[in-house]
Image 1 (cartoon, rainbow, N blue to C red):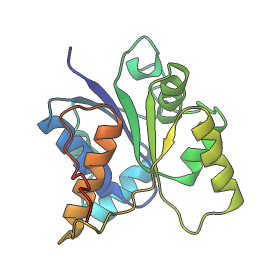
Image 2: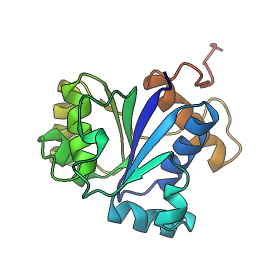
Image 3: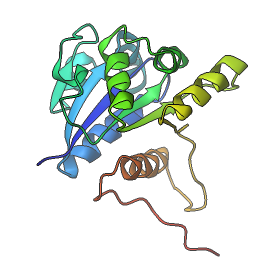
Length: 187
């Protein structure tokens, strides 16, 4: 059976992570299910020059955030994992408090209740106490807060290389066996 990956895109900066995730998943034969919030689309347009249709064309399936009856809103729809890339503090708060008020937060809630892997690429600095408490709450529920901080010990030569390496690490966390992050082999 083909692995399925749910990808959420919110209004935090870092739309390049979602785009790279969708493209790399396709290369690896992973079926993608995209939910992009209106603020996520605004960011994709500002940062990448993509409109909703161009972004959705990168996914196998795309859903409106208001489509709470979509297949990914049910635990009976088996997925390998869900990644929110990037994850705004607003979406983090909604997920941390179980507010399934749109398809993205409902799919995240389903991922947690089914004990599947949820990876939130949280984007904000500096962090205030509410942000930290929400990250703790998600972690206590089994989610993974993964701020997309680049690793420099591999000497990346471009932003694209940093984004690609971060995405490989996320895909590995999601249980995608073909993901190939660079391993640290010591000094």
